[in-house]
Length: 536
Image 1 (cartoon, rainbow, N blue to C red):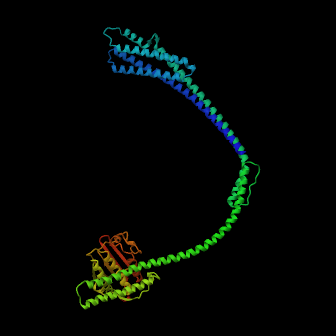
Image 2 (cartoon, rainbow, N blue to C red):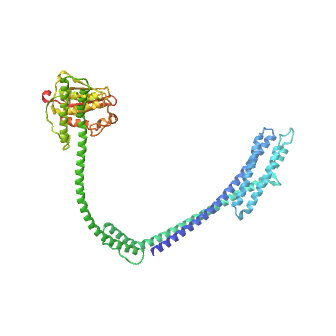
Image 3 (cartoon, rainbow, N blue to C red):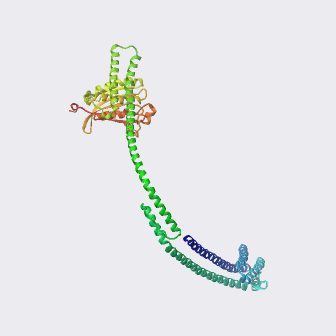
């Protein structure tokens, strides 16, 4: 019902709009023809004016020629060429005027054609006379010569050319004025037509809009209320149904939809509650299992990494000490005893490391207990140098102990665990020899200095090896991090040595600093607080 009325109204409005467009197109075509006729008449009038002016200039040239005033032949040819061009243009415009003109302009077109033909014949005769013009002989009658020439300029085929041109100018001016008035009348008519049709179309559109607004307001309000109720979740709302039109069908469908949604909601709520209870229970179980699995896997990975790193250095030192002792010539009993003593000490250290690693499987390295007592730092450094010398020799690197910076630093006591501190020094020495070039030298020295207003002791391990990039230095104390140079030189590394050394140093109240340049070597500095007696 509403669809049929709306379709008819739209078709009627579209028909009115089409009629308005057709009328506008016809009016525009008429106005365009009138404007075109006026333009052609104006161009013809301009052509006659130009022809008259050019003819007058040619008359002046002939007068100069007869008087012997030095008339230029090129000027004559240019003027004759201009006259021929103007006549050709007038002939073309006359043809265009006949094409655009109606039956009422037939006589006007004939007169225009006749004028153009006479002028073309006169120009041909004039060219012959002008070409024959010569300077007057002495004693010749100038008045008679000028009258003869004027007859050629002003008359042709027994007709007065000046009168012909004047008549043509008047005719074309009248045609221009006539077409201009006609174009103005057509435009005024078009304006009134457009205004009338636009007003009619607007009134019809307003009438249709008012009619459909009144007819659609109530059913649309009911449907809108029903849609808002569904949006709010009020599935008990029902839309009033009246009549058998399209809106009644939509209202019935929405009421049925609301009833179905209410039924599905009740079933879905019950099923969702049961599912949420099951998911919550299973999620809690999975979360607990996953946390336990992650913790166990993290402890396993950390333990394997620390074991692989911490066992490598002591075992390598033991093997290096034994190989050096066996490889050389026979030695004295004290030499063998000294080598065996170092092997025993390193084995004891290896036992402590194994115990620590077992403890690390249960807690972090920072939580390891330390047996704090005054430790002679110089002796500890010399022991670590002696233990790492064998390993360094196998790598073609020399380890040189430079001793204390001054005699007062010969014996420095620090509070700490000797085993842990020796482990830190061995890690630093192992890194220095591992990343040194064959034939290089690793220098070890210690001294006292002030830091933060308190006296501290420092142990420097300096090598001439591959170095570390400036952008990688802040990351070397992270677990499993290895710089690009280190990976290229020693692919088998694990990246745990420096993190462990830093953790042990901080457990003693100190820290490890690195200064390095790529290709020039690295200086590792262990900073430890002095014992109270040493500070005093």
